Image (cartoon, rainbow, N blue to C red; front, side):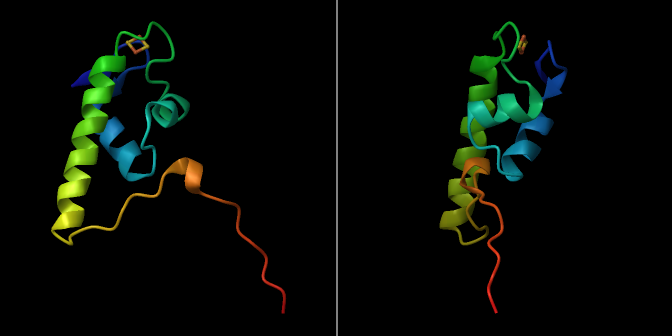
Amino acid sequence: MYVCICNAVTDCQIRKAYCDGACSMRALREKLGVAGCCGRCAPCAKDVLTQCRQQNARQEQAGQRVPVTRDDELTEPVAVAG
Ligand code: FES
């Protein structure tokens, strides 16, 4: 279903972005443009984000999945001397 009409973003795209590391509304806005125009989609997008977090937590508890790395936790590769 469409979550953000202004940017034609679906819940599936938000779920995929979450799996790719966009774990916050700020990250979703930067990656997909969600809530970047009129903002009416923000509550629904937050609901999808919450569902993703809950599903991820359940999978982690069951040992089925490693935690998602947030985009803002990523760092540049470090050169190794030697
Ligand atoms: S519906 Fe998402 S910014 Fe307008």
